[in-house]
Length: 175
Image 1 (cartoon, rainbow, N blue to C red):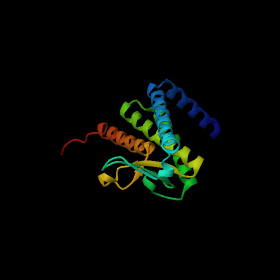
Image 2 (image 1 turned 180 degrees about the vertical axis):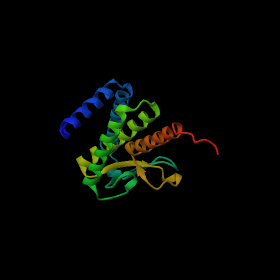
Image 3 (image 1 turned 120 degrees about the vertical axis):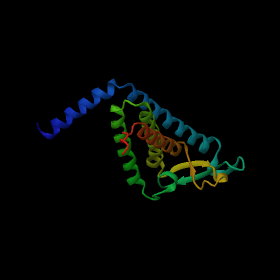
Image 4 (image 1 turned 180 degrees about the horizontal axis):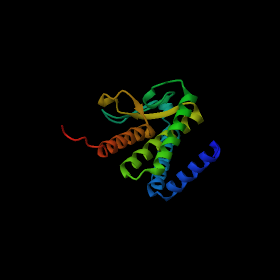
């Protein structure tokens, strides 16, 4: 069997398994909801609240709305790498969706949905504008970064994936 035929057969098998997996569809829907929530909050902040003009709105001693154009990854890391970050986000989202197709554990599937939704929410901004809109500022709690719903979603998703790894780890026999 040649490589193309083998790849096609494996893709067909994956799709058959993913299509029959309810966690795949629930995870995909969850990711879509996160992307929608992320984009709606950014639209509201930019066009309704007009935060870019105001730069900052003080809400309380621990939380403010602060407008930041983030040219990097989560929390501003890797600034200035627009297209490599866009490509990396795309590859990660595709790989996680592939993994989601075979997952049977709801904790892992939930984590994947959060990470994919966050990655795609920020990917849209990065491709469309060249930067990601950040606005949630908890600097009153000594948290130095301004972030958005997508960033929070990615971090919550990673926590779920780590929790799943902890819950499903193989226990080694005591010595």
